[in-house]
Structures are given as C-alpha cells and as structure tokens.
Image (tube, rainbow, N blue to C red; front, side, top):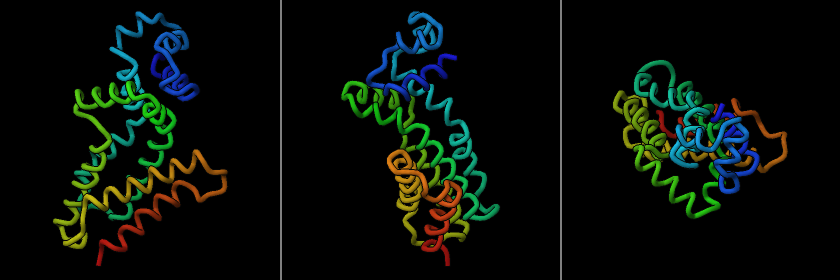
Length: 189
C-alpha cells in the first residue's frame, strides 16, 4: 500500500516535488509509520523501483542460464521488451531525481550503499553475450560491452520518446524484436 501510493504520488508530482508526508497521507499512514519502513525518500524510491520491475530483475538474473539455449534473437528480444517496459515505467520518477542535485546525490549514495545501480543491467546482459560468444554463437571479436549498451540504450531512447511523441509509432514488441535482430546482424556469421 505504501509503495503503491508512493509510485502514484511520485509519478504525479515528481520525486523532487513530493514529501514523505504527502506519500504517507496518500497511503493512509502517518509519516512516522512510513519512516519505520524507509529511511528517507531515496530509500522509498528504490523500493518502488524494485517492486515495480521484478520481471526485469528476474529476467536479467536468468540470462546467465540461457547461454547456448534457445535463440539469441529470442533472448535479446525478451531483454529488450523488459527494458522498454522498465524504462517507460521508471522514467517519470527517475527523471525527477535529476532535477534536484541533493536528491540525485542521495540517490547515488543509496545505490552505492546497496551495491546497486543501472550499470548492473548492462553487466548482466554483457555477461550473457560473452557466454554466447564463448560458445561460438557470436562473432569472436565483437565488443560485447558496446553491444549491451547499444541494446539497452535503444530501449531507453524508445521509452523516452514514448513519453515525448504522439501515438502512432510501432509497438513495443516490434521495436524490441527489431533492436535484437539489427544487433545480431552484425554479431553473427
């Protein structure tokens, strides 16, 4: 209930413009009750992000077991679909983090303290691609870190443009498959 209210209020007002008191009120709690569960607003934001994106976290964790199975295109398309959904959902909240230098510093500190951060997704995707490369399913000289960055960057850009552009673009599934297919054209023989 607290996380639902926090996600709703943060999306409506932006993280920099919302107080823990407003979040507590929206959840039907006192601010003191909120602080029994979360140390600060940045901690609450991280909890919302973790709660709202379990599919993406589970997918990236499972990629290590996928090397050598199924199709590369299928696995990368699944990653791209999850990334698009994650970035689209999280962008309104995360964008507000950058609006206030103090909030950004607190957020970065919380990520460091938890050993978390956006770089971990790139690392997991790169590890999966490296395993596929070791199995001979990807071209030997390919820059795996660049490939992971290109895939996730395309997904981020697509999700961002979804917030900025009028409807009528291609669908998420089509975009995800296209990103995976285009990358693979340069990675396979």
